[in-house]
Length: 176
Image (cartoon, one colour):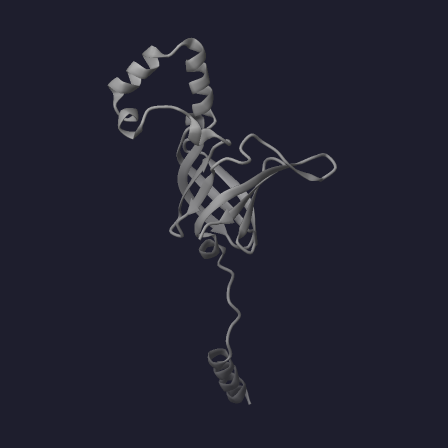
C-alpha cells in the first residue's frame, strides 16, 4: 500500500502543474514614469502632494539587481544651462559661474537641488512585497551608502512604492 501511495505521489508531482511561484523581482524589472506623489493625511485620505508632480521623473529596475531613479519638478527640462560638452568642461563651468549674478547663482542652485537622483542595487522580498534600495551614489551626498525600503503594489502596468518611514507613496506607470 505504501508503495502505491509513493508511486501515486511521484506521478502526481511530475504530471500535475504546480502553481507558479511569486517572483516580484522579475515583475519589477522595467522602466517606469512617475504618475504622481501622494501623502496621507491624518484622516487616512491620500492627496496629491509635492513639487515633483508633473515633472519628467523615472525609475528603472534592470532585473539583475541594479536600479536608478531621477525625480525632477515640472519645467526642469527647460532650465537654461550649459550644453552637454560645456557642462563637462571645468573651464566652461567656471566661466559660466563667474559670469552669473548672485540672484542667478541662487536660482541655479535651487534648480539643481530640485533634481533628485540616486543609483543603487536592489533586492526584493517577495513574501513581504518590499524592495530594498542600497544607494551607491546620489545628488544628495548624505545618502550615499544608505539603505531604504519601499513597500510595493502592482495594479496592471502601475506600481506603487510606499515609503515605510512616512505616509507618502509614489505611483509609477510602466513604459513600453
